[in-house]
Structures are given as C-alpha cells and as structure tokens.
Amino acid sequence: MNKIMSFINWVARKLGLERDPEEPIIVPVVRIETGWTGHKEEKKSIPKQLVLKRLEFSDRSTIGELWIDSSFQCYTLEDTVRKIKIPKETAIPSGSYEVVITYSHRFLRRLPLLLDVPGFTHIRIHPGNKPDNTEGCILPGLVKGHNFVGQSIPAFDKLFSKIEKLLETQKVYLHICGG
Image (cartoon, rainbow, N blue to C red):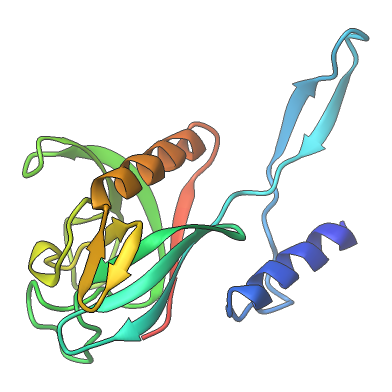
C-alpha cells in the first residue's frame, strides 16, 4: 500500500496538485480470475483521474491541458476565468466534478456532462474551436493557439471513448486546477 500511496503522491506533485496526506484515498477492490488454476484472487485497481490544468489566461479564453493520470490527452479551451460570472462568458470554478454521459438535446448526441457545478448548468465537454463555442463548456483540441484549439473533433472522439470506457467500471471525476 505504501508504494501505491507514494505513486499517487508523485502523480499529484507532477500535476501540480495539492493533496492532504491525511485525506483517505479510496481504492476499489475488484475480483478477477487468475487463469487456468481457477483460483480467485483480489486485485486492487486505482481509479483513473481526469485532471484539467489551466495554464494560459487571456481576456477571451483559458487554455489548459487535460490529463488522465499522468498521460496527456489534449488541450482544452474554456471561457475566461473571472471572479464575477458573466453568463456564457465565464469558465467554471476550479474544483472536482463528477462526469456522466447523457444525451444532449442541443447537440443531438451523447456527451460528457459535469454534475453539480456551482452557479452553472449544462456544462459539457464537446467539440469546438474558439471562445464563442464554449458558453462555459470545455472544448478539447489536439493543437492550441491564442484563444483557439484545433482538431477538436478527433480530440473529442478519443477523449469521449476513454471516458465512456472508464464509466463502465467506476465513477469518473474531472479535477480542474488553476485560475
């Protein structure tokens, strides 16, 4: 267990996250078959963590990086981080949010939805390229520029399939830091 804790603390430090060492870490236990012997053993699996690190701030947008554990997935574009919310022009607060996949009547497809975002509703992860496309949501991209992410559809498709796969076995949370 000490090796697992050391690894989790190492990942948190690498991502620039602060973690209270006294705070418990929940590690689910799953049962697996070990093969031809037919014996069962318990194997611990560490929940995957989605982390959005906000890095570049402008008066029109916020550019970040989205990671799953220590693996870079894509860049992100959000609205500007503000102390006072301007509807459809303000990034959501930093924090941890459960992610589920639901049907979006606006986009006419299933999309990741962030739950219980204070002061915001219908915050999703969806394709888009510029601040006018965000309205508080998170836009993934494989390339970034000033107030821009590009190749958003392939970035979204790859990220969506990973989130969907993770949701088959665990709750998924997006941890947003910075700003």
